[in-house]
Length: 115
Length: 116
Image 1 (cartoon, rainbow over the protein chains, first blue to last red):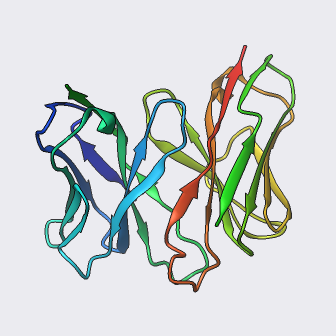
Image 2: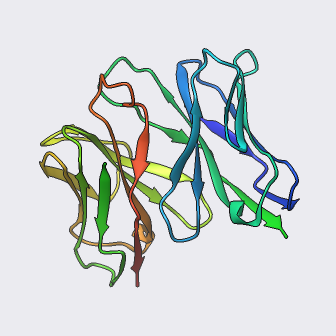
């Protein structure tokens, strides 16, 4: 079964600190790994994504680290701000070679950044 | 730029009543379309996806059905709602396969459905 395991379920960080959320997958056919940010009552927003041909991708304060051999990837939020408080989901999809890319999501991490 | 709309934003329906949720996408052609359900405090479960008009694939057997009558319109329906159908329903789109960004899925604002 295609699964993506996400941890921790919840995370509390002080303003200015580093938030780290981890995900692990089983299906070696996965080759696209996005992270989504969701605020209460809103749809998830694509935050950052990585393909397996690189080990790290950085966009502003957000960095994805990818370890292909361990089948793990993580999101790092540097200089965390109260406005970053949200639920974060990791996801993965295979290159099925077909005409769709079905995402498998982790269960989410509720991040709270205290001022 | 592309925009995705969902309506209604919230809905309260009694058990046994029918359901119709609509999703439309603007600014793109031949998108892949997806319906997800998000239960409270849980992740997203893919319900249906569509690669073209009239082409629907179901991921989970359930009380719901989907249709795609137009290229950029996706509808989620039920003939008789169950209590367990309550949740946050999200529509998403991704670009025409073969384009560089076809992996990326973008979500709509969602519909909060409460079945009473």
